[in-house]
Image (cartoon, rainbow, N blue to C red):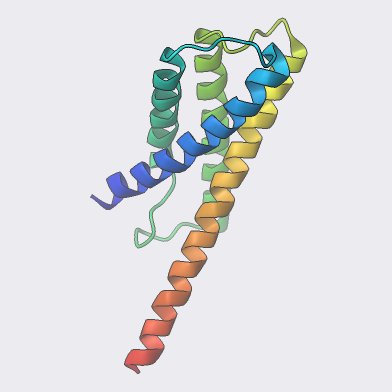
Length: 141
């Protein structure tokens, strides 16, 4: 249950990030006058869900501790997974073409930005939770 909750929270963060970068990416590479259709919303939701599913390789809080090296490897693998998913689905959905190097660079920048922001927000959230828990422990003692 905890895993499902964690994945849903990640799904929410990824969806917001993807919508934000989409709002920037489309005008930059296709212009402000570009018409987009409602199916892009379903594409974004599906992409976000597949990205959240990949988080299964990351350990949950309270699970067995992993070493720094193991955690680092998992983070790298998750980043690679995200790249494969976003570039693969982006190509499938025709969000970009590999023939246009600037679009590919834009997608990579978008992936890195969303990944970084989600990681940062998650880290800050975990720090706040740890502080809250430590405060509760002090109050109990």
